[in-house]
Amino acid sequence: MIRRGAQMSLSLAAIAFAAVSGLAEAGGITISTAAGDKIITLEALKERYERPDAIPFPKNNPYTEEKEKLGKKLFFDPRLSRSQIVSCATCHNPSLGWSDGLPKGVGHGMEPLERRSPPVLNLAWALSLMWDGRAHSLEQQALMPITAPQEMNMTMDDVVDRLRMVPGYRELFSEAFGETDSINAKNIVAALATYERTLVSHKAPFDLWVEGDEDAISAEAKRGFVTFNTKARCSACHAGWRFTDDSFHNIGLETDDVGRGKFTPPSVAIMKYAFKTPSLRDLRMQGPYMHDGSMADLDEVLEHYVKGGRKSPNLSPEMRPVKLSKTEQSDLIAFLETLRGPSVKPQLPDLP
Ligand code: HEC
Ligand code: HEC
Image (cartoon, rainbow, N blue to C red; front, side):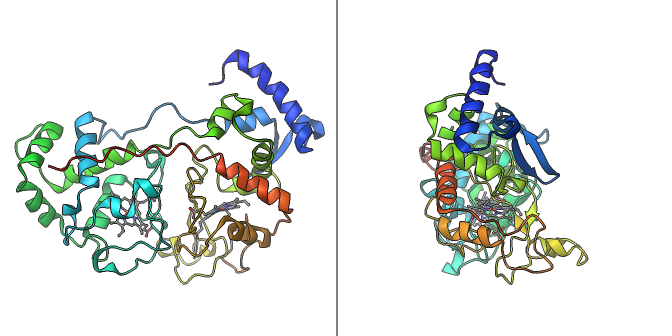
């Protein structure tokens, strides 16, 4: 993906940078991966974080503009909820980084949910959904909030009946699905999922640096990137351009929620209290963080990783205490900030 001409200047930059970061030993960087330690060049390390060029859509729900347009209206439409005041965007609000800024989501009946609302970005690539991975596709996932009593508290039959009453929706569904009577549960979730797949992080300063623009991020952030991949071992779990391995880990938080453990045999101790590794792209710098919104800021998060999490037979073997100086910690935060792209808010749709 990197242009040939750029390759040379990248390797020179790598040498200069390795000298800056004090990691020049043998011209390589020792990174930690789930499969063990490995020595690679800075250039090769950056390549691991290159963004893909195109969004993948599944064969059984291919992209069309009409489905995206319909899905966007459904996503922002509170009529999908019993009370007609809760839409998907209530908890996945583009102005709040596609989440809600709350420690735990609040839906029908204003009761807090059990977990934090994750942002709905870059999910076209996700291998499993929900903090515990209980949904396997965006189509399957979309049924859950609509029918959950504490979220939108509807039945799919009631949603279908309601949308059938709206002439504008009858038109949009037949444009998207080419039939006269195409308002049904399957097509509702197909359209929602298509729209969600188009929600992709905008290019962040970090991406420009990966593409070869040395001035795109600060020296602190560059040091933070190396620390992230080496000493701090963050990349053992927050790997690849989405900064997640799509896997589940118990990072040693105090919690009664068994997370992934609900779906794995009790013998798999490390899946008890394990949650899906969240992406770190477009991370809200002011928190709250974690599946339960229990951490208020990034200093608290880093302090947790320095201590290595609460010891238990369920703790991930990738979690171990690591001494990080104040500078290393502020470098890491400077790096995380470079993963934030411009906050381009979508134009809100006119509802039919
Ligand atoms: C009341 C708040 C609320 C509403 C309304 C809501 N969600 Fe969510 N959403 C959540 C919470 C909380 C989770 C995490 C649940 C869990 O992991 O157990 C979540 C998880 C998700 C995920 C999984 C993300 C990931 O990274 O795994 C997707 C996708 C999603 N919601 C889409 C939707 C769509 C589509 C709608 C509308 C049909 C919707 N949500 C409505 C709160 C909400
Ligand atoms: C063992 C795998 C693992 C390692 C190593 C790891 N993380 Fe995490 N990280 C996770 C998981 C899993 C969560 C979510 C945990 C939860 O909510 O229960 C998480 C949550 C976070 C969050 C909160 C994100 C959010 O949206 O709430 C941040 C920030 C974060 N990690 C940064 C880091 C940094 C920085 C490092 C290195 C110092 C690191 N992580 C090391 C797996 C890991």
